[in-house]
Image (cartoon, rainbow, N blue to C red):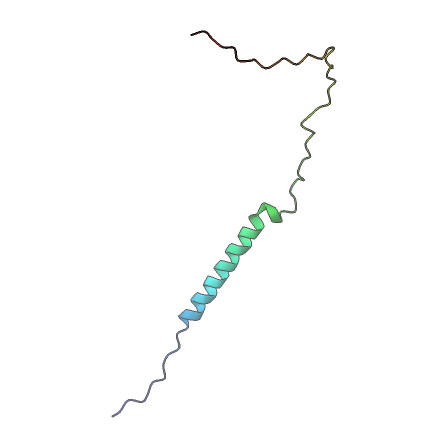
Length: 78
């Protein structure tokens, strides 16, 4: 007796695993996008800061100092 040719059994595990991996990857991407503050709709607006300088009245000098002459080299006796 000869055995009849058995058709190869289709492996249903591979497509199920691939679909599961795809769903997990899609869920991870959705969670990452939803937890990012860049996509947040209820975030408080960025506060505006006051100027970091102030206007002040600075008194001008009452005199103008005269320029000093640069020191000159004087010969030393040896």
